[in-house]
Length: 134
Ligand SMILES: [Zn+2]
Ligand SMILES: [Zn+2]
Image 1 (tube, rainbow, N blue to C red):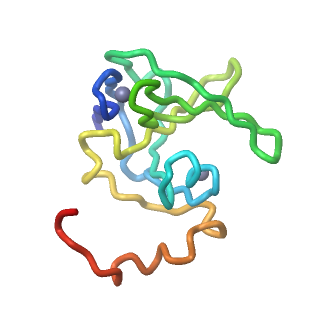
Image 2 (cartoon, protein in one colour):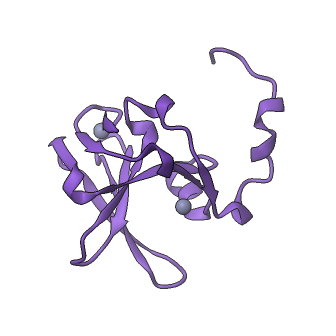
C-alpha cells in the first residue's frame, strides 16, 4: 500500500510503498534506547520505492555487539526516527518507523522481535489505568 509520512517538525517528508503484512515490533534494547520508549515499530520498504520529498535526514551508524552496523536515519532538528537500513553498497531495505506515517492506524504490527528483551510490563499495558488525554 501507498504510505506517506514526516518527522515531527515537518522538515522531512517522504512517500513509499509498503506491505502491511510485514509490520513488526522490535523489543531490542537498542530500539528502546533510540526511541526512549518500550519498543519501535517498523515496516520494510525497498529503497527504490522510497521517495524523500523534503529535508535532509541525518545518519548515525550504530554498531551491535555482533559487530553488525546499521544506519539510523533521523531528523536532526526534531530527532524523529525515520528509518534504519544497512550500510554498504548492496540494494537497501529501509525499515520505516510506522508512527511517522499518516497510515499508522492501518498498519498494526503482525509480529514481535527480540521479545526476550521486552520490558516485563509491556504485556500488561491494557490493565494500567488510563485517561483519554494527558
Ligand atoms: Zn523534524
Ligand atoms: Zn530493535
